[in-house]
Length: 135
Image 1 (cartoon, rainbow, N blue to C red):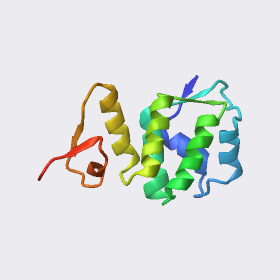
Image 2 (cartoon, rainbow, N blue to C red):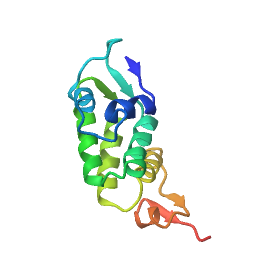
Image 3 (cartoon, rainbow, N blue to C red):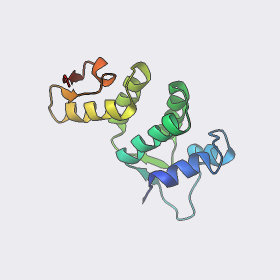
Image 4 (cartoon, rainbow, N blue to C red):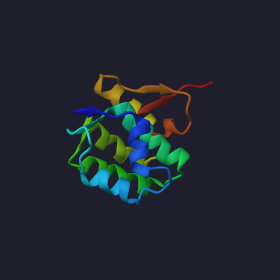
């Protein structure tokens, strides 16, 4: 198995152009092999950073990000770290107002036994997973 850094995953997804429909991205998501062989591992931090780039830098709508995530989850050559957590967080992200990372933080905290996640973030605090602290 080969681990991927965010910059490698994003470069494969979009190449040098900002185009998620280009053949390079489609080949990666369809399960093409890599020169070194073996599956490609995407850890949870790389996954979150990739989503941030798609939303913030590429200004992709949540619906488009959801499509890319679905293809990544279905790709035969990608092993996604904490896959079930990612699936849960993507659903929350798509429906809610907060960032992917906010929902990921709340979910990881919940899995660790936390009853809430304290935040100053007004947008994240709209989710019942958070408790907003007054500034």
